[in-house]
Length: 340
Image (cartoon, rainbow, N blue to C red; front, side, top):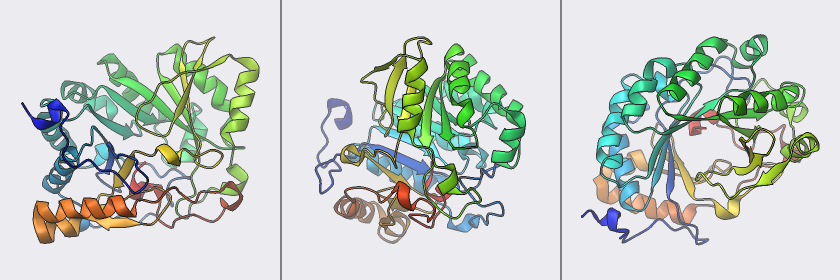
Protein backbone atom coordinates (compact mmCIF):
# COMPACT_ATOMS: atom_id res chain seq x y z
CA UNK A 1 0.00 0.00 0.00
CA UNK A 2 1.20 3.50 -0.83
CA UNK A 3 2.68 5.31 2.17
CA UNK A 4 0.32 8.23 1.71
CA UNK A 5 -2.72 5.93 1.90
CA UNK A 6 -1.60 4.72 5.34
CA UNK A 7 -1.12 8.29 6.54
CA UNK A 8 2.67 7.98 6.76
CA UNK A 9 4.21 11.33 5.81
CA UNK A 10 7.86 11.33 6.72
CA UNK A 11 8.49 15.06 6.27
CA UNK A 12 5.29 17.11 6.30
CA UNK A 13 5.44 20.74 5.23
CA UNK A 14 5.31 22.63 8.53
CA UNK A 15 6.22 26.31 8.69
CA UNK A 16 7.97 28.26 11.44
CA UNK A 17 4.63 28.90 13.19
CA UNK A 18 3.61 25.25 13.37
CA UNK A 19 1.09 25.44 10.52
CA UNK A 20 1.02 22.41 8.22
CA UNK A 21 0.65 23.15 4.52
CA UNK A 22 -1.69 20.63 2.92
CA UNK A 23 -3.27 22.78 0.21
CA UNK A 24 -1.54 23.90 -3.00
CA UNK A 25 -2.98 26.36 -5.50
CA UNK A 26 -1.40 26.16 -8.95
CA UNK A 27 -1.74 28.88 -11.57
CA UNK A 28 -1.39 27.12 -14.92
CA UNK A 29 -1.49 30.35 -16.94
CA UNK A 30 -1.56 34.11 -16.43
CA UNK A 31 -3.79 34.46 -19.49
CA UNK A 32 -7.52 35.05 -19.31
CA UNK A 33 -10.32 35.70 -21.77
CA UNK A 34 -11.78 38.34 -19.43
CA UNK A 35 -10.17 41.54 -18.09
CA UNK A 36 -11.98 42.05 -14.78
CA UNK A 37 -11.45 45.58 -13.50
CA UNK A 38 -10.41 44.52 -9.98
CA UNK A 39 -8.07 41.76 -11.19
CA UNK A 40 -5.95 43.08 -14.06
CA UNK A 41 -5.23 46.04 -16.27
CA UNK A 42 -7.12 46.49 -19.53
CA UNK A 43 -4.01 46.18 -21.67
CA UNK A 44 -2.29 43.34 -19.89
CA UNK A 45 1.00 42.07 -21.28
CA UNK A 46 1.06 38.34 -20.74
CA UNK A 47 4.11 36.18 -20.20
CA UNK A 48 5.86 34.58 -23.17
CA UNK A 49 5.10 30.88 -23.31
CA UNK A 50 8.80 30.06 -22.88
CA UNK A 51 8.62 31.30 -19.27
CA UNK A 52 5.62 29.17 -18.35
CA UNK A 53 6.05 25.80 -16.67
CA UNK A 54 5.47 22.79 -18.91
CA UNK A 55 2.82 20.28 -17.94
CA UNK A 56 5.57 17.82 -17.07
CA UNK A 57 7.16 20.32 -14.69
CA UNK A 58 3.80 21.10 -13.08
CA UNK A 59 3.20 17.38 -12.56
CA UNK A 60 6.65 16.89 -10.99
CA UNK A 61 6.20 19.82 -8.62
CA UNK A 62 2.71 18.71 -7.59
CA UNK A 63 3.97 15.15 -7.02
CA UNK A 64 6.63 16.47 -4.66
CA UNK A 65 4.06 18.47 -2.73
CA UNK A 66 1.83 15.40 -2.48
CA UNK A 67 4.76 13.37 -1.17
CA UNK A 68 5.20 16.01 1.54
CA UNK A 69 1.59 15.90 2.71
CA UNK A 70 -0.49 18.09 0.41
CA UNK A 71 -4.00 16.62 0.12
CA UNK A 72 -5.75 19.24 -2.00
CA UNK A 73 -4.72 20.91 -5.24
CA UNK A 74 -6.63 23.72 -6.93
CA UNK A 75 -5.87 24.76 -10.51
CA UNK A 76 -6.24 28.48 -11.16
CA UNK A 77 -5.11 31.12 -13.61
CA UNK A 78 -5.67 33.62 -15.15
CA UNK A 79 -8.33 31.37 -16.54
CA UNK A 80 -7.06 27.77 -16.33
CA UNK A 81 -9.37 26.39 -19.00
CA UNK A 82 -7.92 28.67 -21.71
CA UNK A 83 -4.51 26.99 -21.55
CA UNK A 84 -4.05 24.76 -24.56
CA UNK A 85 -4.53 21.04 -23.84
CA UNK A 86 -5.33 21.73 -20.19
CA UNK A 87 -7.49 18.62 -20.06
CA UNK A 88 -4.36 16.52 -20.63
CA UNK A 89 -2.84 17.93 -17.45
CA UNK A 90 -6.03 17.36 -15.48
CA UNK A 91 -6.23 13.78 -16.79
CA UNK A 92 -2.62 13.12 -15.76
CA UNK A 93 -3.16 14.53 -12.26
CA UNK A 94 -6.37 12.54 -11.90
CA UNK A 95 -4.68 9.30 -12.88
CA UNK A 96 -1.54 9.91 -10.80
CA UNK A 97 -3.17 11.17 -7.61
CA UNK A 98 -6.96 11.01 -7.42
CA UNK A 99 -7.14 7.44 -8.69
CA UNK A 100 -4.30 6.42 -6.35
CA UNK A 101 -5.83 8.06 -3.28
CA UNK A 102 -2.85 10.32 -2.70
CA UNK A 103 -4.98 13.44 -3.19
CA UNK A 104 -8.32 14.01 -1.51
CA UNK A 105 -9.40 16.60 -4.02
CA UNK A 106 -8.47 18.25 -7.30
CA UNK A 107 -10.50 21.39 -7.89
CA UNK A 108 -10.60 24.37 -10.24
CA UNK A 109 -11.34 28.07 -10.00
CA UNK A 110 -12.72 29.36 -13.30
CA UNK A 111 -14.61 32.28 -14.80
CA UNK A 112 -16.99 29.76 -16.33
CA UNK A 113 -16.53 30.86 -19.94
CA UNK A 114 -15.17 27.47 -21.05
CA UNK A 115 -17.16 25.27 -18.71
CA UNK A 116 -19.93 24.19 -21.07
CA UNK A 117 -17.52 22.33 -23.36
CA UNK A 118 -15.37 20.84 -20.60
CA UNK A 119 -17.84 20.00 -17.80
CA UNK A 120 -18.55 16.40 -18.77
CA UNK A 121 -14.86 15.55 -19.11
CA UNK A 122 -14.02 17.29 -15.83
CA UNK A 123 -16.62 15.18 -14.04
CA UNK A 124 -15.27 12.01 -15.66
CA UNK A 125 -11.79 12.87 -14.42
CA UNK A 126 -12.93 13.17 -10.83
CA UNK A 127 -13.52 16.91 -10.45
CA UNK A 128 -16.31 17.02 -7.87
CA UNK A 129 -16.33 20.71 -7.02
CA UNK A 130 -15.50 23.97 -8.80
CA UNK A 131 -15.47 27.66 -7.93
CA UNK A 132 -16.89 30.03 -10.54
CA UNK A 133 -16.25 33.77 -10.35
CA UNK A 134 -19.53 35.61 -10.89
CA UNK A 135 -19.94 39.17 -9.64
CA UNK A 136 -23.28 40.12 -11.16
CA UNK A 137 -26.30 38.75 -12.98
CA UNK A 138 -26.85 42.03 -14.80
CA UNK A 139 -25.65 41.69 -18.37
CA UNK A 140 -24.54 45.32 -18.78
CA UNK A 141 -22.69 45.37 -15.47
CA UNK A 142 -21.09 42.01 -16.24
CA UNK A 143 -19.74 43.48 -19.46
CA UNK A 144 -18.49 46.54 -17.60
CA UNK A 145 -16.70 44.50 -14.91
CA UNK A 146 -15.18 41.88 -17.23
CA UNK A 147 -14.61 44.27 -20.16
CA UNK A 148 -15.67 41.35 -22.36
CA UNK A 149 -19.24 40.26 -21.56
CA UNK A 150 -20.61 36.78 -22.44
CA UNK A 151 -22.67 36.37 -19.27
CA UNK A 152 -24.99 33.88 -20.99
CA UNK A 153 -21.97 31.73 -21.85
CA UNK A 154 -20.90 31.68 -18.20
CA UNK A 155 -24.39 30.79 -16.97
CA UNK A 156 -24.56 28.00 -19.55
CA UNK A 157 -21.27 26.64 -18.24
CA UNK A 158 -22.46 26.73 -14.63
CA UNK A 159 -25.59 24.81 -15.56
CA UNK A 160 -23.54 22.29 -17.54
CA UNK A 161 -21.29 21.64 -14.55
CA UNK A 162 -24.23 21.11 -12.23
CA UNK A 163 -25.91 18.82 -14.76
CA UNK A 164 -22.97 16.38 -14.67
CA UNK A 165 -22.83 16.32 -10.87
CA UNK A 166 -20.15 18.91 -10.16
CA UNK A 167 -20.93 21.01 -7.09
CA UNK A 168 -20.76 24.72 -7.92
CA UNK A 169 -19.63 27.47 -5.56
CA UNK A 170 -19.95 31.00 -6.86
CA UNK A 171 -17.36 33.58 -5.84
CA UNK A 172 -18.62 37.18 -5.80
CA UNK A 173 -16.24 40.08 -5.18
CA UNK A 174 -18.31 42.58 -3.19
CA UNK A 175 -17.73 46.16 -4.37
CA UNK A 176 -19.30 49.27 -2.91
CA UNK A 177 -21.25 51.24 -5.47
CA UNK A 178 -20.73 48.52 -8.06
CA UNK A 179 -22.60 45.35 -7.13
CA UNK A 180 -23.45 45.72 -3.44
CA UNK A 181 -27.18 45.95 -4.22
CA UNK A 182 -26.98 42.59 -5.96
CA UNK A 183 -25.56 40.61 -3.06
CA UNK A 184 -28.85 39.47 -1.56
CA UNK A 185 -30.48 38.83 -4.98
CA UNK A 186 -27.39 36.83 -6.00
CA UNK A 187 -27.61 34.80 -2.81
CA UNK A 188 -31.29 34.04 -3.36
CA UNK A 189 -30.69 33.16 -7.03
CA UNK A 190 -27.75 30.88 -6.21
CA UNK A 191 -29.41 29.07 -3.32
CA UNK A 192 -32.58 28.50 -5.33
CA UNK A 193 -30.46 26.59 -7.86
CA UNK A 194 -28.36 24.64 -5.40
CA UNK A 195 -25.19 26.72 -5.69
CA UNK A 196 -23.16 27.96 -2.75
CA UNK A 197 -22.13 31.60 -2.68
CA UNK A 198 -18.96 33.06 -1.19
CA UNK A 199 -18.46 36.81 -0.86
CA UNK A 200 -14.93 38.20 -1.16
CA UNK A 201 -13.40 41.54 -0.23
CA UNK A 202 -11.38 42.96 -3.14
CA UNK A 203 -7.67 42.51 -2.47
CA UNK A 204 -5.03 45.22 -3.07
CA UNK A 205 -2.96 43.44 -5.72
CA UNK A 206 -1.50 45.25 -8.72
CA UNK A 207 -2.52 48.47 -10.45
CA UNK A 208 -6.09 48.19 -11.71
CA UNK A 209 -8.75 50.53 -13.08
CA UNK A 210 -11.06 50.09 -10.11
CA UNK A 211 -10.75 52.76 -7.40
CA UNK A 212 -10.18 50.40 -4.50
CA UNK A 213 -10.76 52.96 -1.77
CA UNK A 214 -14.14 53.97 -3.19
CA UNK A 215 -15.15 50.37 -3.93
CA UNK A 216 -14.01 48.80 -0.66
CA UNK A 217 -16.92 47.11 1.08
CA UNK A 218 -16.41 45.54 4.48
CA UNK A 219 -18.03 42.13 4.60
CA UNK A 220 -18.75 42.65 8.26
CA UNK A 221 -21.18 45.36 7.17
CA UNK A 222 -22.57 43.07 4.49
CA UNK A 223 -23.00 40.27 7.02
CA UNK A 224 -24.91 42.57 9.35
CA UNK A 225 -27.16 43.79 6.54
CA UNK A 226 -28.00 40.25 5.49
CA UNK A 227 -28.62 39.28 9.13
CA UNK A 228 -31.31 41.95 9.34
CA UNK A 229 -33.40 40.02 6.81
CA UNK A 230 -32.20 36.43 7.15
CA UNK A 231 -31.20 34.02 9.90
CA UNK A 232 -27.50 33.20 9.61
CA UNK A 233 -26.40 30.06 11.43
CA UNK A 234 -22.70 29.45 12.04
CA UNK A 235 -21.55 26.11 10.63
CA UNK A 236 -18.24 24.31 10.99
CA UNK A 237 -17.88 23.72 7.23
CA UNK A 238 -14.31 24.09 5.98
CA UNK A 239 -13.05 23.60 2.44
CA UNK A 240 -9.34 24.17 3.00
CA UNK A 241 -9.43 27.85 2.09
CA UNK A 242 -9.91 31.06 4.11
CA UNK A 243 -13.71 31.27 3.88
CA UNK A 244 -15.92 31.10 6.94
CA UNK A 245 -19.43 29.83 6.34
CA UNK A 246 -22.98 30.45 7.51
CA UNK A 247 -26.18 28.61 6.67
CA UNK A 248 -29.07 30.81 5.63
CA UNK A 249 -32.11 29.34 7.33
CA UNK A 250 -34.66 30.83 4.97
CA UNK A 251 -32.94 29.62 1.77
CA UNK A 252 -31.28 26.48 3.12
CA UNK A 253 -28.11 27.49 1.31
CA UNK A 254 -24.53 28.14 2.35
CA UNK A 255 -22.98 31.61 2.40
CA UNK A 256 -19.22 32.09 2.73
CA UNK A 257 -17.17 35.15 3.68
CA UNK A 258 -13.54 35.76 2.70
CA UNK A 259 -12.37 38.83 4.60
CA UNK A 260 -8.65 39.52 4.07
CA UNK A 261 -9.03 43.19 5.01
CA UNK A 262 -11.66 43.39 7.73
CA UNK A 263 -10.78 40.10 9.45
CA UNK A 264 -7.97 37.84 8.27
CA UNK A 265 -7.47 34.21 9.23
CA UNK A 266 -3.71 34.02 8.77
CA UNK A 267 -3.24 32.08 12.00
CA UNK A 268 -4.72 28.98 10.35
CA UNK A 269 -3.22 29.40 6.87
CA UNK A 270 -2.55 25.98 5.35
CA UNK A 271 -1.81 26.91 1.73
CA UNK A 272 0.81 28.14 -0.69
CA UNK A 273 0.54 29.33 -4.30
CA UNK A 274 2.57 28.29 -7.33
CA UNK A 275 2.64 30.68 -10.29
CA UNK A 276 2.73 29.49 -13.88
CA UNK A 277 6.43 30.47 -13.98
CA UNK A 278 7.28 28.26 -11.01
CA UNK A 279 7.47 30.93 -8.31
CA UNK A 280 6.11 29.67 -5.01
CA UNK A 281 4.43 32.40 -2.97
CA UNK A 282 3.97 31.43 0.64
CA UNK A 283 1.46 34.28 1.18
CA UNK A 284 -0.86 36.01 -1.28
CA UNK A 285 -0.21 39.37 0.38
CA UNK A 286 3.60 39.20 0.60
CA UNK A 287 6.37 39.17 -1.97
CA UNK A 288 8.41 36.37 -0.36
CA UNK A 289 8.83 33.59 -2.87
CA UNK A 290 10.98 30.59 -3.74
CA UNK A 291 11.90 29.75 -7.33
CA UNK A 292 10.84 26.13 -7.81
CA UNK A 293 11.36 26.25 -11.56
CA UNK A 294 15.06 27.05 -11.15
CA UNK A 295 15.45 24.44 -8.44
CA UNK A 296 13.84 21.73 -10.58
CA UNK A 297 15.64 22.62 -13.78
CA UNK A 298 19.04 23.01 -12.16
CA UNK A 299 18.99 20.30 -9.50
CA UNK A 300 16.08 17.97 -10.16
CA UNK A 301 13.72 16.56 -7.56
CA UNK A 302 16.32 16.66 -4.76
CA UNK A 303 16.82 20.41 -5.21
CA UNK A 304 13.06 20.88 -5.50
CA UNK A 305 12.56 19.14 -2.16
CA UNK A 306 15.20 21.35 -0.52
CA UNK A 307 13.45 24.42 -1.96
CA UNK A 308 10.22 23.36 -0.25
CA UNK A 309 12.09 23.29 3.06
CA UNK A 310 13.31 26.85 2.43
CA UNK A 311 9.77 27.89 1.59
CA UNK A 312 8.47 26.67 4.94
CA UNK A 313 11.11 28.67 6.78
CA UNK A 314 10.23 31.79 4.76
CA UNK A 315 6.43 31.50 5.05
CA UNK A 316 5.36 34.70 6.87
CA UNK A 317 3.00 34.87 9.80
CA UNK A 318 0.46 36.86 7.80
CA UNK A 319 -0.22 39.37 5.05
CA UNK A 320 -0.13 43.18 5.13
CA UNK A 321 -3.57 43.89 3.68
CA UNK A 322 -4.97 46.89 5.56
CA UNK A 323 -8.25 48.57 4.62
CA UNK A 324 -6.87 52.03 5.40
CA UNK A 325 -4.13 51.58 2.78
CA UNK A 326 -6.18 49.78 0.14
CA UNK A 327 -5.71 52.43 -2.55
CA UNK A 328 -2.01 51.56 -2.77
CA UNK A 329 -1.41 47.92 -3.80
CA UNK A 330 0.17 45.85 -1.04
CA UNK A 331 2.09 44.03 -3.77
CA UNK A 332 2.63 45.09 -7.37
CA UNK A 333 1.75 41.79 -9.06
CA UNK A 334 -1.80 41.33 -10.28
CA UNK A 335 -4.10 38.68 -8.88
CA UNK A 336 -3.97 36.90 -12.23
CA UNK A 337 -0.21 36.35 -11.82
CA UNK A 338 -0.40 34.54 -8.48
CA UNK A 339 -3.68 32.78 -9.10
CA UNK A 340 -7.06 33.44 -7.54
